[in-house]
Image (tube, rainbow, N blue to C red; front, side, top):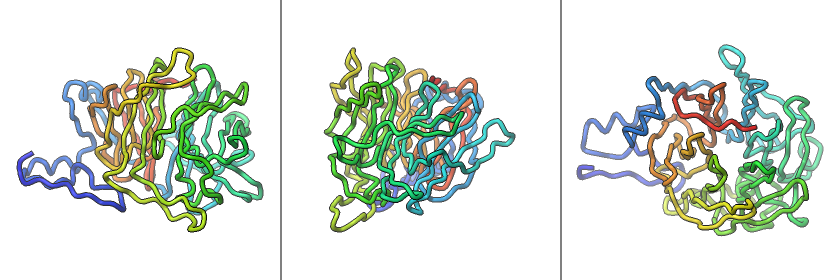
Length: 366
């Protein structure tokens, strides 16, 4: 960049986008208003395809919108809306089989409070329910791994404690082909008043085997473990650390919200998955988020890594090199592929739901 350039830093809100960098070059102003930023011309243009499009589809509240799960048999995309207000139970579904798609609220039976991560496996939606209270809709709910059968609307609790301790905030999860559920457990539910109990456990990542009930810690070095994903061949795991957004956990002061520190952890790490898929090793950093923190993490069919980072989604190769950035006008928490060819990417977050049509295929979850 030519001198003098400067990118401002904010320690209270998402830091200004790359396009907001002050640069003494008139052409750089084009960056701020582009739907797509291409950092690797050859690979970036290939994944975008000849006619990529970005559309802002639904305006939603400023609440966190998370846990998108595509159910192809229904042509529906399920997603969550978290508090405020605390205790709000209805979630959302996008009806993709309607023209244009429509957005409605729905309640499962029993309702699931504050799903924060989701995936699809063997016909069921798996949700990380991040809320916990003595009275939610008249019943007690705790942070848990839940399943939803989209055909019957019935939910089942698979896991809601670690030897009697409440989990902090099951933020995101992924299911291995062997049926094991891997999930991250940071402390955001306390910061954001989604639980009535201060954290009882350190932030960590776990592997849960539903067939036996066994729960094992697989990673405890991250400040706030968040997004989690396997590579398509399940030999590599990616976990993001969003410790740059954190807050106090002392019960006596109560929930104080979370604050951003630009010098804190906002990194995606890669790990080797053992041959028996029981543990991970060889932690190495691969991507320092260039905006805000790397929230949701997923992998494309070709192995590329995607992460929601501030007002957009970054597309990375397996070494963490950024290839393309999708730019939005709202903070993106998560995203999901839909459609017969899995070439439509729906994005959602605080204030908006949008979609991208491009050439990068997602994985078909079965």
